Image (cartoon, rainbow, N blue to C red; front, side, top):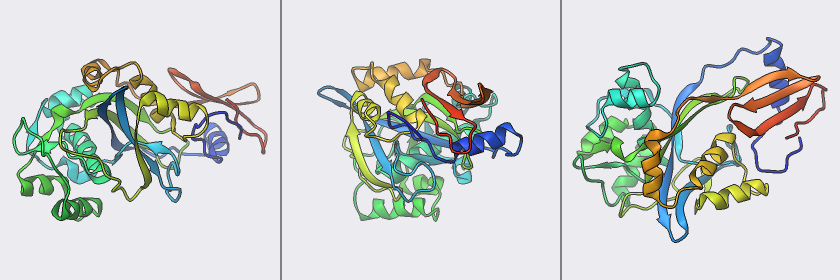
Amino acid sequence: MSTTNGQWYPPDWPERIRRLANGELTPVPPRRAATVLLLRDGAEGPAVHMLRRRTSMAFAAGAYAYPGGSVDPRDEREVAWAGPSRREWALRLGLAEGDGTAAQAIVCAAVRETFEEAGVLLAGPTPDTVVADTTGEEWDADRAALVARELSFAEFLERRGLVLRSDLLGGWARWITPEFEPRRYDTWFFVAALPSGQRTRNVSTEADHTVWIRPAEAAAGYDRGELLMMPPTIATLRDLEPYGTVADVLAAAPGRDLTPVLARARLEGGGVVLSWPGHDEFTKHIPTGPTGGATG
């Protein structure tokens, strides 16, 4: 493999792409997932919270990403809710009209995973408030129980008398893992401001490092090959660069196109061309030879 940047590119992709093209590989159905670009204002503009996945992880090991993960079936359980209705969220997320149950599960997953992996909770005792502090032994015990799936998010919110603040989230993008990947996710990307009084913590069992970083700085690190990232991560970082404040980002969210981005692989010139529609920078040309690498 040859590359000049930090694009995550597993060595088994060329062979898996060839198998898919030859009808020898059956795509795995993608699991629904959610991830959150947590933002805060700084002297030079917004910064985003990122974590580096442990090298022992089966998926995207060593890559920089945002807090997030798969939808838990229990995320469909009824919760106290503030913000746009579940049906409005279903329409915004591109789900079947009126599928509020699925929409709630995705939004709940976004809020739950942000709490599990960053210690930040987008919920409050009333529809117009947010908890000011999520540190302490009792909060940590609840967070650990959520991670271990010993406690559902609905049970957690009910026990603490909290309302999920869906209005603090903005839909930003949607990416689906390529069909040739063994682990596939249909992931909605959200933006949210770090609530006043709360702070992020490196509490994720999946990360070995966390950082607040300006999108342009993170993108420059990727371009130099210093920061490893998957295409959706660097794409969403580049999309954040024009905005001067977190408020500007949140104001832009309702107008964002949430049409799913799915990689395509086609046979061309004796090789395979891997591309992501609308994102030419990720295009890879893969020779069909047994030892051929990918070139950008």
